Length: 270
Ligand SMILES: Nc1ncnc2c1ncn2[C@@H]1O[C@H](COP(=O)(O)OP(=O)(O)O)[C@@H](O)[C@H]1O
Ligand SMILES: Cc1ncc(COP(=O)(O)O)c(C=O)c1O
Ligand SMILES: [Mg+2]
Image 1 (tube, rainbow, N blue to C red):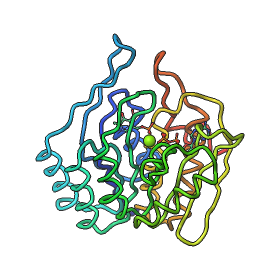
Image 2 (image 1 turned 135 degrees about the vertical axis):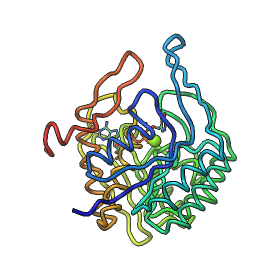
Image 3 (image 1 turned 90 degrees about the horizontal axis):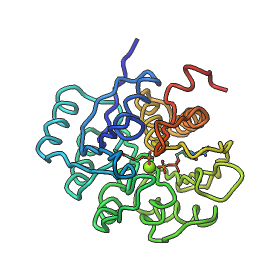
Image 4 (image 1 turned 90 degrees about the vertical axis):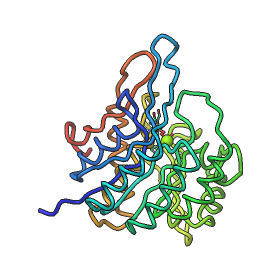
């Protein structure tokens, strides 16, 4: 059996539901060999309302990890998650050029449940340097508002407008995730490939336990692309995967509830 390999360039979520942990668990569930270039370590303070503490990894350390993986092993696809600096965003873009494989860009700007202010230069670098390299880019509503410069997005029409603008930056396929945040009875994502819009409505699960949903979804797309699946098929498979992971999400403590990456394996595909 062929072994397909995927790389994630992302941060560590010590609590295991998002970031590189979500990516690796997802790669494993979808039978892809996962490798990691760690950019940042996020810890959470249980004595201070789960306040996020962010520890960047030295740039040289990130470079050496990428050399190991891209030069030393080889990959079939990659994804990016939390990239905490302009230098890291540029390094991720260079890595995509060098590796020449499909790339899923999850333009992580803020963690759910935190109110950290976004550094504008990060949004600028994502918009100008990394999004143009994307096979698929998966902004949530906030990130789509920042990348498109539309600001607050509250309707499907605005999601379409944002997707059009983000496609214009150079991404091949844009998926704006309405998810649980859009006021709608379904979970609505908008896909745009430069030709037509697809409003993807799926079952909306009533839960607040969606920590890591975006990481998991983008990792699932990357895993399917690593296996050589066509992009639309990869997105459909990933959507089914995240819906089941959210259906079986659970609380870790009073602050956070991740999705269950193993949901399809344990409970079936529904
Ligand atoms: N409550 C929900 N029910 C069903 N699907 C959801 C729900 N919340 C999010 N999703 C889906 O999960 C994926 C990740 O979206 P989202 O949670 O918005 O990303 P992020 O974690 O980056 O904010 C999207 O496909 C979205 O539609
Ligand atoms: C390291 C890391 N990456 C990414 C995210 C974003 O997670 P989500 O998939 O919920 O958008 C988080 C959120 O806590 C994180 O800690
Ligand atoms: Mg996200």
